Length: 370
Image (cartoon, rainbow, N blue to C red):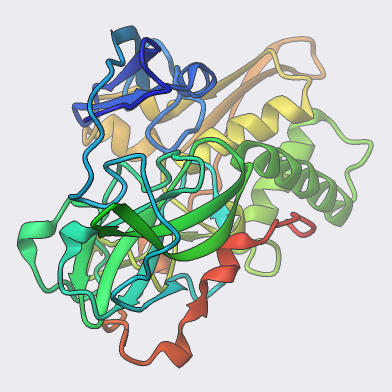
């Protein structure tokens, strides 16, 4: 990796994810601080004592050095560009999310680049300000037909008619997505698109408030106890006429990543798993208030053990009952796995009339319904 002037002399911060062994490097101290203590999806870790799946801050790894700027090579690998040159190839950008959920901090959004450029090494995708907006995670989607297995894990994966890339940022805000094509003088900006990365944490909190309000009103327990309100929330999240949550998409007993049937953000897709469900239930219980203790049971037993299988999806709350004694109760909103069964064919990337325009990733999303 390289950082060019004016980053010379600036610290490069490193984080480590012990769950998958990945390191993440950033020049942005704010991004570094935000990621510490969060899991690989950017959520606050449910149990910081166990550290499972979360980013551990390792401080300054090294400092950026000055290097000579090449005049040719992979697009985006240099700091020069010219407007006197034109791109040799055509580029059209499409979102592969048919629901139009938009872009969210910490969530990967697949993007299809339709182009007649046969050389992926001459193409790069970045932000206009040089910020890397291509996700460090490179998921494979079951409903995308990849043509080259050798490019798995790369920024661009070859598909019919072009390439698939991945937009991702942990920092909410507006970005200008650029497709850069290598040229004699550096690179040419071949295509641009506005991308707005919505704040996942803020929207999640807003959604939780709406769920509590709607569930409590529907059950008529506005003056009820904390536990009665939490049970109303549990019923609402499991009720098909309420939120109707389903398990993450799967087929034949396996979980899959589908570009056509996104699993996130969960408050729009209404899909979650047996970790997200109790984690959010614990957050909802904390927002309702009045409990002596709120506990996520996911971490109580070794994964796959009998105790884990029977209890990991629960949120346990402790409160003082009418007799003045502490009482424990379990609540959950995790549906059965088979409710998420989906089997989808490959996306026809040659028929772009059925794809959503990249402008879907340029919109701000407001949470108005739970």
